[in-house]
Image 1 (cartoon, rainbow, N blue to C red):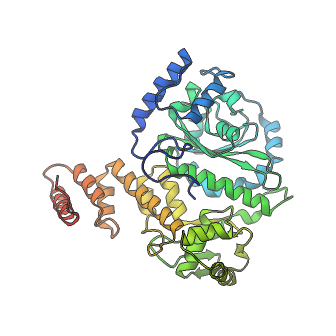
Image 2: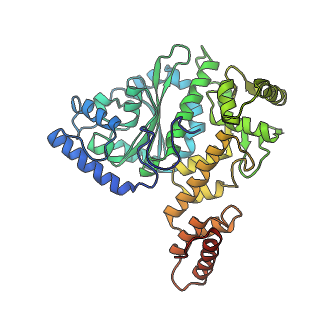
Length: 436
């Protein structure tokens, strides 16, 4: 589910991510606006402008008025005829399943464009769509760099890589209140670029989660197109039929209609990792995700997969190893809430760590990303009620960062603040830290 080269903490080592962990979004927006103004007036680029964005600004400046709106190229019957015949129509139900939760929250949009940057579908809450219409972010509009300037779908189809574009990184001024993440989609048989899938919303989208989600959606689309070569209509089997429960338990549960499969620890790890990689994993890739650098006889992994195939039947495919149908996992729903910065929904979705007993490197990375994401979102929100719910739960009782945030958020003189102060003091003493 995570980008191949994303880092969960520290400085931005992934050039496709817009903000490093802990960066102040408002401060960065101001710096970027000033850099954008200097570029427009003097042609120089300085300040915290990523080289990816700087290159896009230069390309955009040759073709686009920074105050103009993207042109509308297709409307009504012409638009309907064009997009119904487009290959990405086959995977639209899949995008709705994987990203629809973000698009329905009232603050974000799901968009799909073709290889030329024409928006084929823009979906989401009516209010968000109405705001987007003011900048012509509508189906039928042309959003490649040469018509709309720097934006995530336009850059993604230009450079061929998933990318985030944050606030004033957009070249066109009317688009700068928005942040977006997009990933290109290729025909799995020919390698031809088909278009891109995009999530557009507020500053909170500048996180690893949004980039991971669109990348996973693009991979899943390519995997579906690969297994349905020649199909002309969306496959009915795209309807979500399989769910995976893996938060707060070591024995994940896979549910397919009335069929409920309880998996052992190793099979749980394999299914979780395959759910994170809908495009599939080779034997070597899956071995690295499961065992890391440990030397292992390849027969061991093949035996595990053989036993798992016996249990899952046609759900498990090989060459590469992947799940044949879209799987709706509880930890992926949690990641969607984190990408949308919905702290209350994230806290409700969090039922414990992802496979807490697993030491598989791929699972450990996903677990840390989710755990840190929930806690960081709660700390940033500074809502005492949400922080109290977290610190009362088993996984938050010893979370000193959350307790410190709760202490700072509670009113002076309140009994709850006194209790929080005692707990922080106890944890400070336990960890050998000075109480502040």
